[in-house]
Length: 291
Image (cartoon, rainbow, N blue to C red):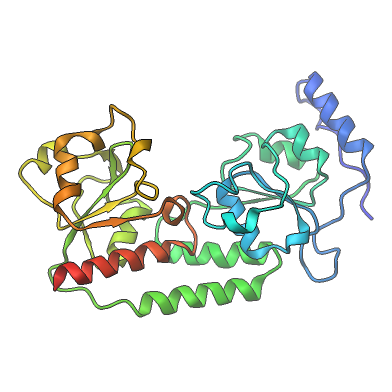
């Protein structure tokens, strides 16, 4: 068995918080090392945000999940139905350490300093990447499955992604245009994962500026996309801010007059295998609009 966790490295500023957390770490029994169960899987996994929750719920042994983020059961969590009955933890250092994890999984949870903090206590962290293409999403699925001791299952999930994408109808030479619209009144252009989702569905992105930008209301006054990809989180326009550009009459007219793909928030809130659900929904509407 490993020895007790290390105290903070010399040279770091002393603080009451460090003292308390170090005492918690030293008071408990040492956490088991990953793979100690004999099957290569960690035994006590803590997930710090809902993006991490998706991978933990999909690839980790349920009995090995010590805690998920408070958002694991929210409607924008793809694996929310699997989160029922599992404990939640806030991404705060003292609460994480008290759970004695042998693996922490995060995308953004805990803030920028949490990784080095946990490293000081010999608690390993798996950092989820931020893929920008569907190919990178596939790679991330395989990598995270391996990290959670489920490499074979990760390969199966990646292979299923490949099959579903290969089954999509071939896009026309002149693809239809699609405008991605969010409740906050922003859209997404080249250089984003949403742009890659549209392209994978055989659609051209109506937004001609790279990155994330406000809806192009002036352009929409005289140009029309063929399809609206509405990420209104299950159609909840009530969640839209009163000052959002999505409430502007020009934007509302697009929703009323163009074919609309209602994208579930859980499909696009994180980069995971579930993006294929969004791609298939967009491809279906693209096929219908082309007929």
